[in-house]
Each structure stands twice: as structure tokens, then as C-alpha cells.
Length: 326
Image (cartoon, rainbow, N blue to C red):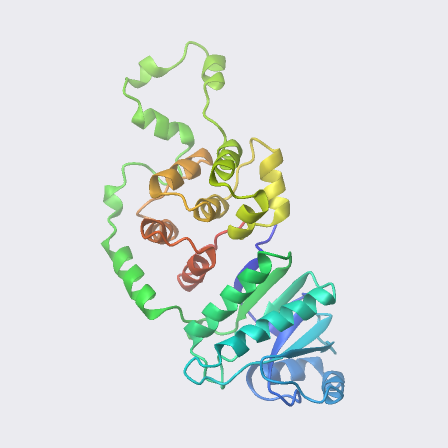
């Protein structure tokens, strides 16, 4: 199972997806950066197709075959040059038009570079925010696997103020203050919280104990979705979860999700920190001060920040597993 939106590091020309997006110039005849790499990898057939298109306006996109590339299509999107943010809507339009073209050509997967963030000068943090927000809005309505491809991790940037604040928060965490072991099984929490000695709390038979077990992660999640007023579809899309994975969780009471999946649902449901810990506990996990992933999740929940994609941008920056990972 794969997340509908993934931020990855790699070479976009080598991805086996239905379509890749080229950060093109208005002539569509090739250029530097990603544009040049795609044309070189695709070969002369791609240039010949582009010559027949007669160029493309800024903020729009056009589709061709892929030449020698392993994908089916190349979608050439012409982003704006940075002018202090005045042309933000043109950058949004690039992503919207490319996604619409992919959808019209029945693509199930598409890969984007960070459009306009190279020689066109768009600040990388702002370009990233536009990309993630626009793609996320599309995925709330349609199903498609979308990759946002970062070629050079050293050039990846998130909001400076956020980075400074979360780094300070991480530095303030003291693992010694944890009173539970990370990822302890659910019964460990119950035993530590029991008001009676362990021996007195043991039921007379194993069957009695099994009959008294807590609700499962699946039962807890579905109950919380119903209480939230969300539909199932709205919840799993907010969580950046694949429909097939959600179907497994719904139909299998004993399904054990990954920690990243459980945390994604806690964020999608906008749970408080105590509620989030309870939901993760149902899946057998804890939030610990000794884990960077856990600290980042806790940071966002404590501040009431429930944007899964913004959290994933931060997790990617710190080389952590992204929310929604199966």
C-alpha cells in the first residue's frame, strides 16, 4: 500500500510512473535543470513532439509521449518566475493543469519536480508549500498516486521559523522523563496504570482476561471517525492513507497498522495529545521523547497543527518515516 502523496528523493527520469512532469520553459524546446535532464533522457522523439505543440503559456501545461523514458507521458508545465509571490496563482495553475491532464489520460501515478524552484527563483520553501497544498486539494477529490521528487536533499527547505521552533523543541526533550518504554504493547500501559498490585489484577483464567481485553485499534478508529462527523473517505484522505489500506483496517478487527499509519489517523481526526496516545496505544505504540518521529508528532499536536502534509514535509527534512506509510 502506498501513500497518495509522497515526498521522495531521486531522479525523476528513472521513475516508472504513468506520467512525469517537466518544469519546462514556454518554448517547450528544452533548457537547463530538470528540463534538460528530461529531454536528454527521452531522446530526440520528445523534442520532435514538443516542436509540434507551438509552445505553452505560463501557468499551463501540455502533454506528450515519453520517448525513451520509462513512463508513458511527459507533461510539460511552464511555471512563473519569482516576483515576490505575485504570480502564486500561476504556479498553482501549473500543478492543477498537469493533474487534470494526467486524470484525463487515465494516469494512476504521476511525479512532479518542484516547479519554478530552480533558475526561475521561486523560494524553495514557498514552492514546496504551493505544491503540497495544490496536490493535496486534488487528492481530496480524486484518487491518484502522486510523487513530489526532490533531486538534491541539500536544497530541500521548509519554513525557517517552523524549523527553528521545532529544533528548539527537540532540544528541550529529555528522554529520561519517559515513564514508559517506546512502543510497549497495550497491556503494559494498563498494568502500569492499575491501582492494584499486579498479582491481584490477574483474572482467574486466561479466558477471563481475553474476554476483558480493550477495543482494538480498528474499533477505536471507526468509533472516533463516527464521533467526528467525517465520512470514511474524508478521514483516510486527510490522513494521506490509501483506500485499500483503509478497507483492510475496516474489515479486520485485529489489523495492526504501522506507527506512521496510526499517527496519521490521529492527525486527521485532530485528536488531543492524550487522545492520540490512546489511539496509538490501541495499535501497540507509544509517543516517546527518545524518538525524533515521536517528538515531531507531539510538537504538532501540542500546537493544534493538524496538516498531515506539513508534518510530512518536516518528517522528510529530518529523514523520518512519513505519515501514512503502511
